[in-house]
Amino acid sequence: MDKFIMEMIATDILPYAVVEGVGFKRLLAKAEHRFTPKSKKYFRTRLMGEMYSQVAKRVKELLSVEKGTALPLPLTVGLDQHTGCVGVKAMFEPT
Image 1 (tube, rainbow, N blue to C red):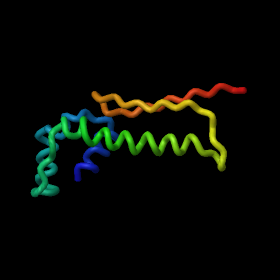
Image 2 (cartoon, rainbow, N blue to C red; image 1 turned 30 degrees about the vertical axis):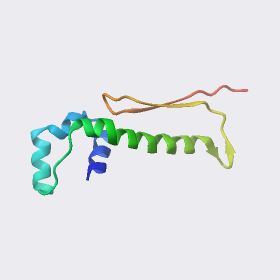
Image 3 (cartoon, helix red, strand yellow; image 1 turned 180 degrees about the horizontal axis):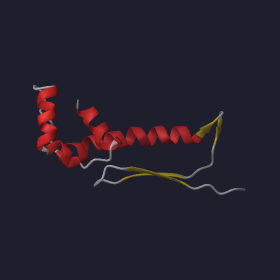
Image 4 (cartoon, rainbow, N blue to C red; image 1 turned 60 degrees about the vertical axis):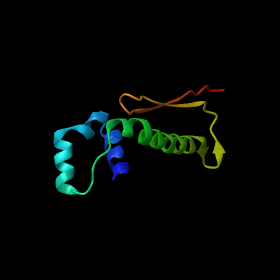
């Protein structure tokens, strides 16, 4: 369940504090009364880092392989710890 909550935060660009909101807690209580959500700190410090690693790896894979040849792109993938947004910057210099 935590993974899906983290995906919701990242996909909808929500603040981590959403997990501590009354409405969110009510929704979870109705949907799955046995589940207790973790704190915003847990999502910010633990799950976002895991998600970032997975996304960064996949983005690098997708950008580095084009029909069996590598693209010469210096790639930087960054994470904003406050918003949870992942940014990708690639520089292309034509030869």
